[in-house]
Structure formats: structure tokens, C-alpha cells
Image (tube, rainbow over all chains, first blue to last red):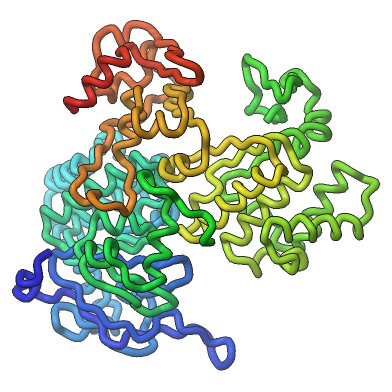
Length: 274
Length: 279
């Protein structure tokens, strides 16, 4: 994305000095360490780092699932306020997530119809006639190549992993949030379904213009999808910028190592540097 | 693996390891003399195979007792320490509980234990898919070390990560809906795939190399067939872009075109190359 267009675009989510500490005293550890960031509207961002670098903790803070120890989050230039359950629900209309493990994303006892109806209700469609709701659900399912007629009255565990993940995207299609956080959305599914899921996420972004935040350890995926890449090492952003500048001209040793650790096709994979 | 419980028994065929047919053998004999010694297995999510209430060394003692009852605990510890050192794992791991180890470390520990009897063949089922890239690389390095140092003679690596497979293996066999659809050397299978399904797989590779961002990922439409009622013709026909009525008429055999290279499609090699240049 060119620099000049960045200035026109509005900042969607901003964090200053964001910190999360776990534990007390000697066993205290800092999972996210004073990070600053600005995510623009309808930008695709990737946060890349190895296991334990604090990516998921950051994502949970952005979602408001855990509180931050220090620092502030600004949503559309307003300081985020989620102190009451009501305000939290309001916030979640704007920010949604897809998690790594589709098998643990659903409540086993809730039927798929209800999962989708919930989304419609959340968008203020509670009073719509039933036929209209079915139409909306069918549309959402067909967007992700699922057939609503085959899913209705089924439970989530009756679907395959890829189908569950696509249903997750159908939920997002109904909710149309401003921001979507995708935490390793493709790491548990096979390579072929991965392409499908990515295509769908990108198509959805095109349609709704939402900000898409990928959390991943796969730097190849980050390079493929994103406008900006943030590299995270032990709770800190060590490098950030456009995808091309970060990945093709990496400056930090850590970034270089991450790139080097991904098996490649056209270059020799150096195993001696472990 | 030759060792089975219902419903995992095979209806036909044979498994031959190093000239020895193990498919008719008594399951108990298989467990005692084949598993671990001739063939060993790293299951998917192997790190969950460790008992959380016992130290790692207990696990190794269990394995050794089953196979060499005469070995003393002291000898087992000495042998395990040596083996762990050779494979680049700190011997202190032996005295730890699984919760004290990271995911990558657990995975490497399970691998080290599964090859402790130096089997001829190691079957590794997605050994690195739950790990981040750095731990994945360490696991792969360890598997390569096992081969180089002669602890195992050959390895069957099961994965959907093509770039990984390309860097680890000599030969690749692509499976679709219960059948092998293509066989060849790693290079041939990745750069000149012959079966439409393998082509689709190769089109979905994501690696951080220049030019990737301009490339378009090719997703294969549709879903794999229901194997309760497999289609009578080609199993890939429903999703194939080159499908002809002939494909659906009868089942298609795996055709060998040269030593070690085969594929399961009615299109000839030449037709496939032409189709590729158009597609």
C-alpha cells in the first residue's frame, strides 16, 4: 500500500504502551511489553512471531477478553470503554475473531441454526420474519460454499474441521464487524482448504472493507496476504512496515531467522542454523 | 503397522518389512518383535502421548521392559542419556515431567523414544504440524540426524505441507480419497505434477519468496468424496477441471511411466503438459 494513501485513511485501532503482565513478584513475566501500533481501516495486518512471543495475548487484549496491565487501546480514535457487559457487547459488534482450533470454537450443545441466528439478532435483526432470517443464513452459507439446507438442525461436531472454519467465516459475513482478528485460522487445516479459507477471508474483506488482523507464525502466509507486517519477539514489536520491506529486506536478525526457518521450494533450506 | 485392533484390520493385501511378511502374524508377536524394532510410529500430536504424571525416563523404562526385560534401570538410564546427547537433547529432560517441557521439546522427546530400539522404518504422521516454524525446523533436523547417524534406515513422512516434504524426502506419493494418485521423486512431484489433484496442491503452496504476492492461489473446488460410497470412476472426477465422460465410466489404474514415476489419470503426459500451459 502506498504511503500517501495511508495518510488519508482513518486509524481504526490504535494501541499505546500496551502491556500485559502475568504473575507476581519473582515469577512475574511480561507477555506483551509496551507495544505501540496503528491499524488503519480496511488494512490487512499480520502479527508474526514464534510460540510464546505474546501474539495471542495481544489478540485477546484487543478483543477485550483479558484486561491490559498498562497502556490504552483506542477504537476509532476513542478510548475503548468496555467496563460493563453491555458496553462489551456493543464493542464486539465491531470486533470479532476466528480462532485456530475450530473444534473448540463452538458450543457443542448449540445447533448451527442458533449460532447463525445469534449473529442476526446481534445485528439488530431480532424482529425480522423467520423467512427473511433463513434467507440471510442461506446467503451467508453460500458465501462460504456451504449449503444451509444441509446444515440446518445439525450440531457443530457433525461438520469437518474445514467446514467448521468456513461456518466461522459465515458468522463474520452476517456480523460484518469493523475488525476481524484471525488467530492462526489455517494452521489446523490442510493445504488445499487453506487456500479456500484465505480466498474467502480476502473476498469478505473486499466486500465489507473491514480491517483484517492475521496472527500467525507462518511468515509465508503473512507475506502473501498482508499490507503491513509486525514482527513480535518476546512481547515486543522488533520490526514493522509494509510486507515487502519487512520480508524481502529484513533488517532484524530475528526476522531473518523466522524467514530462514520456513521450508522453501526454490531455495536451499539451511538446516544447519538451528 | 501390522498390529491392529478392530476396526483397524485390513481386508486384503500384505505388509512386508525387509523381506518379512508381517500381515498374517499374531498381534502379540507383532507387538513384541516388530513394533519398535522393525517399524516405529510417531502419531499426530505425539506430544500428547506422554503421561503427565510420570517422568520421561519412566516412559523409556516401560518401553525397554517390554522389549528387553533383562536390562537394568541403570543400563537403561545410561543408554537413554547417551542417545539423548547424540540427538542434541539435554539429558536433564529425562528427569522432567512433560509439563516442564515446551511443545517442540516434547515432540523431539517422543521422537527420540520412538526410535530408541533403532527401528528400520519410522512412520512420522504430521510430526511438526502443531509447532511453530522454529520448533518445526528443529524436529526436521532431528529426523534427518536419525537417518544420517543410522538409527533408522528409512522414513515415511506423512504431511500436507509440501514445501516441508520437498525439503525432507527423496520420493513423494500423493494420496487422494484412499488412493495413491501420483508417485515420483520429490523434484518431479513438486515441479512437474501429472495428476490434476497434485497440480492443485502445488498451486496452494505459500512460501516467503519474491513473486509470491503476485501469484494467485488455486483452490480446488468441492470436497473429497464420501468413502462409504466411493464413486465408481475416477475419485477426483467431481472436482477435476479436465474431466471427461470417460473418467466417470470406470476406475482408473495407477500407470507407471518410468522407474518410480506413476500417476492415476486418463490424460497422457503430453496432454497434461499442454493443459498446464493453458491453465
